[in-house]
Amino acid sequence: MSAVVKKPFYLRPPWNILFELSKLEKLTPWNVNIAYLLRSFLSEMESTGKVDFRASGVALDSSALIYLMKSKLLLTLQEPPAPPKPPQDFVPPPLFLPLRQELTSTTIQNLLEVLDEVLKGEKMLRLDRVVAQPVLPAVSDILPQFEMFLAEIELQMEKLYEVLCEKVKGAGIIEFSTLVKGVARIEAVRTFILLLFLAQDGKVSLWQNEETEELYIAVGSLNLARDQKPAS
Amino acid sequence: MQETKNQPVDQKPAGPPSPDEKRQRALRLLEAALYVAGRPLDLNELGSVLNTRSKNKTQKLVKVLMQEYSVRNTALEILELKDERYVMQLKADYTPLVKKLVNRPLLSSGPLKTLSYIAYRQPVSQKRVIEVRGQHAYGHVKLLKDMGLIAAERSGRSMALRTTDYFADYFGLTHDIAAMKRELKRIFGDAMQEQ
Amino acid sequence: MQETKNQPVDQKPAGPPSPDEKRQRALRLLEAALYVAGRPLDLNELGSVLNTRSKNKTQKLVKVLMQEYSVRNTALEILELKDERYVMQLKADYTPLVKKLVNRPLLSSGPLKTLSYIAYRQPVSQKRVIEVRGQHAYGHVKLLKDMGLIAAERSGRSMALRTTDYFADYFGLTHDIAAMKRELKRIFGDAMQEQ
Image (cartoon, each protein chain N blue to C red):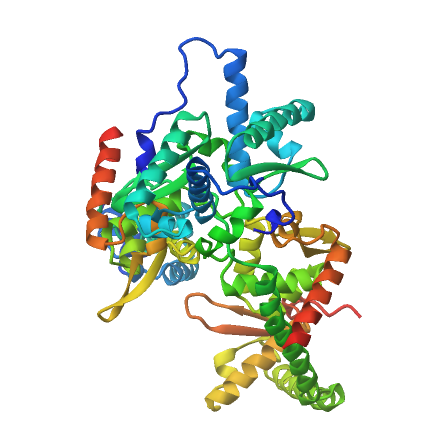
């Protein structure tokens, strides 16, 4: 047999890590980007056209193992620190109180003397309330401002929605980083908050890639936006 | 307390106690109860230390104890009050001679103020008491409850604080709340005018 | 003290009192004094109710009263403490049976242990007390302060806890802290050996 058996692609770096268990155990799990490895493993297999279920199975098994290693580390980290040992000191046994009838000196006069002071305090409390009332702004003073604020938010939401509809044409999805590319940080924050309002209203769908932390925005509910026409 | 450790305890014979010994033990328990309570006790409370529900039996025994005290030459007496309540107290003619030795207040000033407010405004919600007296009054309310001076009672949908019979007994006021409030207002009014 | 209003008074004979009547009167006054004080009284305090400065005379009389109480079948006892002080109290073996009737906050064993520790190590920082007795001891310290059994005093830059004179009186201990600690060590030593 002269034909040289070519090593399958997944035995080369970086995927080889998923197939050599002895190496896996020496690794720091935090250094392994499982999502990247699996994604590229799949696309590589797709591009070569050679689907190997055994290799996929091993890759899946190894990924699970790496996840387990990560979880174990997390759990170790989350363990509360051991409580400091209480200092050892001799605590004597409880002293038991003998029961003695003890007449006390408080009289009805004492009770009435302090009552005067307490009732003054009660009066002050009422005065405080009376004084406090006019200081509070009337409802009518606040509401117009609040309504204007809401109207402004709605206006901004509409504008952003139009921009989004324009930008997602074709692809259906746009990354948040693309949307706010080149704008000031404060403007990016405003856009993000408006997106939350739009998501709340069901006008956009948001989800985040946990590895890259990229935020994806789809106009409308996710499936409808891509594949179906919205029901009327 | 340490001195009591090696005190001779009531001597108990080896066999089961005789009826007379049991009776003596019951009398001493009633005496102990009246002494430590320092307030009038009813037949239920007295019976509870004897582990009996028989008011009749309790009453017979407490009357024997009263008799013991009245024939003995002593500064203390046990009295029967109305509503079948009993109290141990100092005989009145000794009071002025020894009252200079009584110098411990029932309550310190903070809890006393809270008590006076509850007595005057009762029934009053705990919320209101805290508003007027401040956050520290939570502790006062607990202390006053522990001491049996006030109790919480359901008032409509919420809980209201009121003074107890023990409070009334201590300050020599009537047990009827409405009458007590009138009494307090009258005494209080008099006190204000005097100033 | 209010219950003593309108009580019948000891009958007095018309003529001048005989020496025995005078003695009986003095014994009853001492009994009254010990009953109302509910704390140890020294010979000066006891003498003051007899209108005498003779410690010797007062001591002789109080010892007669002690003897009366010890031979009589009663739940109460009169004890002699350090420094010629005398106290009336309930015999210890009745305590568990009647303590539910006491309207003063009584301490449970947790706060009592904290109290023992403070007494034993005083002056001791609150921080140290919490370290040794645990977080719940914050509540104990507050309770003990409220009851007047301990106090905080400045000690250098921090605050230290120590027991009060009221504490010493309650347990029949001397007021001198160093001597009291020696006394406590002896008491605790005995208690430790008993365990």
